[in-house]
Length: 158
Ligand SMILES: [Zn+2]
Image (cartoon, rainbow, N blue to C red; front, side, top):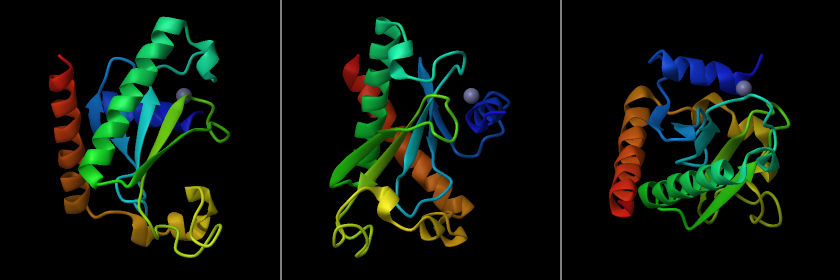
């Protein structure tokens, strides 16, 4: 069983409270834990046999990358990132999904290389602590902010 497929099933049934926008190749969702405020995922629509970017046909891959970039730009604008981090890992679930982290100075405190480094150098138990889960009102506000920027960028691209 795949957690990403489960979450996509919830989106398709209208039961995923984290869902923001559907694109041609994937779904933009806000992360369950928001220590890195604005943390967003972009989930590829199909699981299938594709567990690597190079498994996708070139045109499909190009579209997936383009849409991921648009979502990342929307995250950056909505949550005032100093720098975006992009990660496609899949060691837990091999379903293609991007982790998009808006980064700001001090967000890993003094962990890593004296406060610099990838998000994963921040302790997992702090990153996934219940206190990092937004309340319903905050979650809805974040979804509105991100959705608004995605819509703007899509309109600019027309
Ligand atoms: Zn899957």
